[in-house]
Amino acid sequence: MKHKIKPRGSVIAALDIGTHKIACFIAQVIDDEGGLEVVGVGYQAAQGIKNGIVVDIDAADKAIRQTVHTAEVMAAEVMKGYPLRDVIINVPGSQAKSHNLSAEIQISGQVVTEQDIRRALARAQDQVLSDNLELVHTIPVLCSIDGNTGIIDPRGMTGDKLGVDIHIVTGDLSALQNMATCIDRSHLDIIALASSPYAAGLASLVEDEMDLGCTVIDMGAGMTSFAVFQSGQMIFSDSIPVGGWHVTNDIAHGLTCSNADAERLKTLYGSAIVSSSDDAELIDVTRLGESGSDAIQSVQRSLLIGIIQPRLEEILELIKSKLDRSGLGTSLGRRVVLTGGASQLPGLRDLTQQILDKQVRLGRPIRLNGLPDAVSGPAFSTTAGLLNYVVSRSHEMPAEIMASVDSGSLWDRFKYWWKENW
Ligand SMILES: Nc1ncnc2c1ncn2[C@@H]1O[C@H](COP(=O)(O)OP(=O)(O)OP(=O)(O)O)[C@@H](O)[C@H]1O
Ligand SMILES: [Mg+2]
Image (cartoon, rainbow, N blue to C red; front, side, top):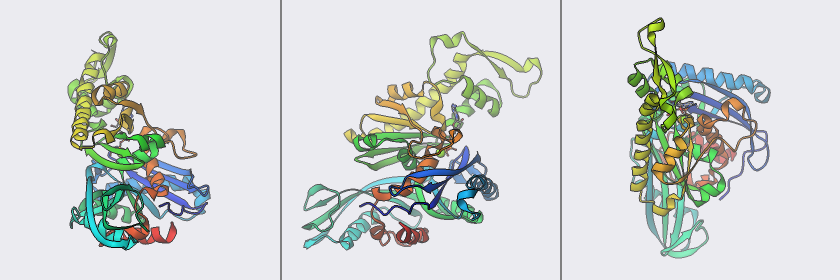
């Protein structure tokens, strides 16, 4: 089910619109296997966006234009003076919903055709699709013929009943429409959508992790989203509307300081786990609304960490309960990869290991060439993964099948483009 890779020399671009930052990567296809070389990057603080939702179109539009412009300037030689037009964007975890569905159709002793697969997929999709949902991903997990499971591609096989198990990700249509309006005002065309945790996984997991079972946790500013991979596919995803921003906010409240100071304290002295030496270490906090020497107060570092740790425990406990309730059981695997800007707090890996009882490692983008150091950290896993997504869509149904399954979609232009170009 491999797709034709975009020809060598083609340019693709990703726009990651987050709560904390907006980032744009422009890359060129450098070989026939879909290898990508990053040729332009831009990023800046997000504006007009809250928890992945556009709350101020003008501010968001301006921030998107500036970010894209920075990336375009860096990629000028490769872009040959043409402005960037086509972008792949992320669907934030808060807007994406994961559904695992099964459907069965009669094929009455005939050979399975693409038409049959379309019918089976449409029957499965019908169970969830509605007017206010947009289809983001349709990932076939497995097919069965007459109850014989484990079939990857049933085309050409014969039987009476064709079954499909699929993982569908849907997005909230009105939130996506607002995002589309913003992108349109920036004179950009959305050519593909990918959910944030899916992209984060594609960027940071090694193939064995995707095959054997692994959960990627993308801890951002406004939310923490996660996706489970198994047998090379994403089989589940979900999110929690809590992230690094909430940790900063807790510090600002707890130590009565500004958000900017709280962010600085978190980054410089923060940790996910209190250690015995933290009582002895004193840190300076500038009290909110005060000035001069009276404004500075020394507090034990353990106080700061005592504010951070419960919030992180809460996030991890919520993830644990969502994973437990997913019904995935052993398919979850034994591994967790932590990524996203907020995953950089020292000690978070150990805390995650304790609460989720899995082997945990920190993840960052590993599948792009030429990524500048400044954007090679965990905060940019989703951005990088949006590019990886375009060259790894072989995980999903072939375009010729999907194009006729999702109907009435906002993204028809994308599907047309996809069929024509890949
Ligand atoms: N060194 C660090 N230590 C701890 N936290 C950090 C560090 N650097 C960044 N962060 C936190 O990471 C968060 C930003 O992460 P990221 O860039 O992944 O968010 P985002 O993608 O914009 O947000 P979201 O995905 O939630 O919409 C902020 O809350 C910030 O405080
Ligand atoms: Mg993010």
